[in-house]
Length: 148
Image (tube, rainbow, N blue to C red; front, side, top):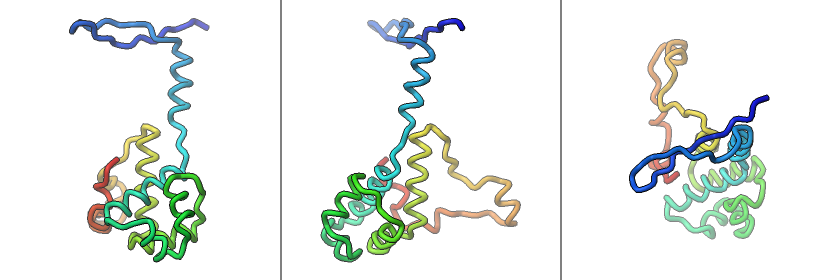
């Protein structure tokens, strides 16, 4: 097995030079490590983003969802794994369908993994169901346009 160095472009006074930065195998393992996503963190980030876009406080949402303020805070910070029942209750309190929240989480996980997220419906899917589908009409205003 040959040892292969990885080179990275480095600009010095406007001149680009290539610098050895490590072993190819090491770079690949580091890249794999960076792709690990903790689902509870992504769920918490999406819930917090939705709540903040609505201009609502943790107290308001926790009261509507019938969840303690501290627990909701821990869910938003990714410190607690929320059950499906709890997520459903929080989404209801935020007036966002659970499926839309999970789709946003899925998109964020795909981006973190470096997977391309298509912004259109695949042609095979629309042909199979016989019409063009515009799924963006189903999302609440601003659900998909949040900060990433």
